[in-house]
Image 1 (cartoon, rainbow, N blue to C red):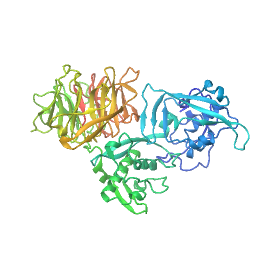
Image 2: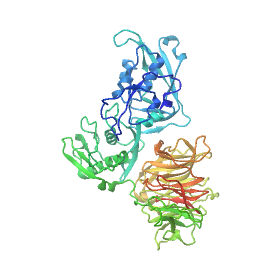
Image 3: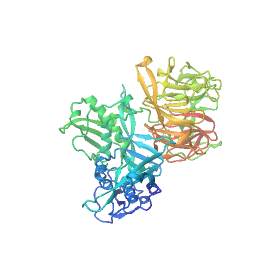
Image 4: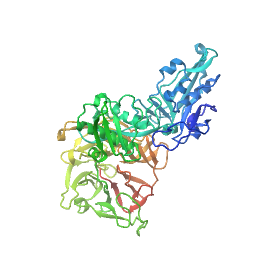
Length: 638
């Protein structure tokens, strides 16, 4: 973490002490160690996320640069209420300062003396300008909001002299400072983690992931452990961006009972959650849905499977219990446990990949390591799908399979027509009313289609003269043009719908660069009469300026293919829908990828199309291997 401490602050003496602790999943140190030294360390030594960091008070007679450095260090600590950090402030500043937001800077805050600000009337004061490359702001709702690549950060910290605690001396203290915490990116990743909390899609019994950041250990402000913070975040309601399209089943005003600070799973992996009086009258059906929101949130938080969630009334009586199996009714994806891996073969027909007896199964296990004569993985067997797309004269260049794997949609080889057909031997091909008049259909025309979890079919018409985003209700009937706010003249090159149907991942070209945007899908009305729009586009991969392909790879995670800003080589990486970089990080590279496909189940392999290697697969913990030498347009259901 040493790089996060800033370049202009000099050597920091005694800013923090570190107490080591054993391996604990969510609670940090359980108690003070009975032996071992307490010692001062440099920030670069604090790589272990289970290490407890405590600040030390300013030394008597400390110079202004030491006060500023000590305070910025103290913001990375685990001190309750940031008590030591507040000792670097004047009494009024200590009372007013709130650590409820976090500004993340790439290399940490860099404070430099600002001599010009300390002349004239402020001759007895001292000012530092704190600058850095801003990455994101985590707001009071714990929502991650990335800055634009061109944004800069510059704020001031002002110091004055004041009497010491005994009324003597003249000590430097900070009386004006930026709001919230200032953390370098590596400190932020050490202290916080991304967690999906869950709410119900409006009008549906389908949960939607809402990513937020919570502290890995006990929160200095609330004194809640990780599980308690996360449960309270669910009770607080959805983040502002997602709120218009989801609902919480918890009654308004529901909170944890009394002074609940330390929730924990028991030896059966069950969690009891005591609620206040506002939830006491919830009915059985409502309570089950409330418990589902907590259970799915905990599944994303812990490494063990959560057995059940019990919600209790304020008087201690049981409100309801929901088991893990019962919660599946409300699952966000509801896909098969082994979804098919599809692609378009060299003849323009759709095939499905499966493994033979000597290789991996469809869930992406190990292979036998043998190769066929053409260099492809011999453990992978392909077969044409049932129905018109697997045989016949109709050729397609891209395909999308519905999430129940009963239908498929394909774009004709010339890129101008959208076709739909059942994946059944007696299925009939239907030519939809969606057509493109794009004269450059080779590189334009219709994008690859995408099914959402509601059964609607989406496709972008890339006709430069009339670009449109289109939706077919239940994959049939006349197309509806979807209004997309915030394109600013950009053209949608690709659309990928989330399983819950309330978020759209769009690749948008401005003529120079293609970037990833995540939009919120708002609906009014029902069925054929419904009106749909995509609003509040936000950057999905702000560190990339040329994105080639994207696929959903989790409930709030995507896999993207593209180049970083200023970069020259193509990269594959996971990103979160809020624009943050997933902890999974960068994936192994593969040559010239044009398409990528993933599923919400991270046990399934990634599938991609490489212009050099054909259809390739990346099972968990393995390397890329060619599955089919001649093929394109890989797809999972969706």
